[in-house]
Image (cartoon, rainbow, N blue to C red):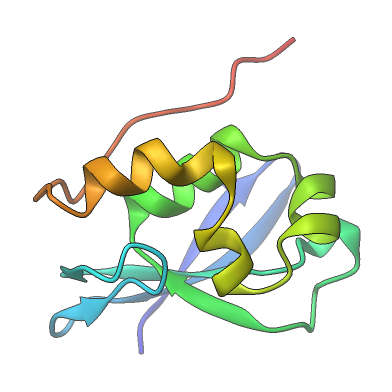
Length: 110
């Protein structure tokens, strides 16, 4: 499984990507060409060695856009809980019917 180094702030973080064959996103349940590992409890909230799930890039970006790391750690420690998040319902309804493989959404700096 190829690994790619990704710069985040002042440190490099290893991001595992799978792109050899079609993979299934565990949040939207679509078949996609690449997935990345999402820590169910974010690393900064103590989840460095905790469970991870495979998410497509649009889902991974949107989860981090709409939910803070604290909310993820406290309220959504499983993929089932994440699927039920009120903040994600409209997005999940849209993405499940879409063929989008990449989405450019970023949280604005305050």
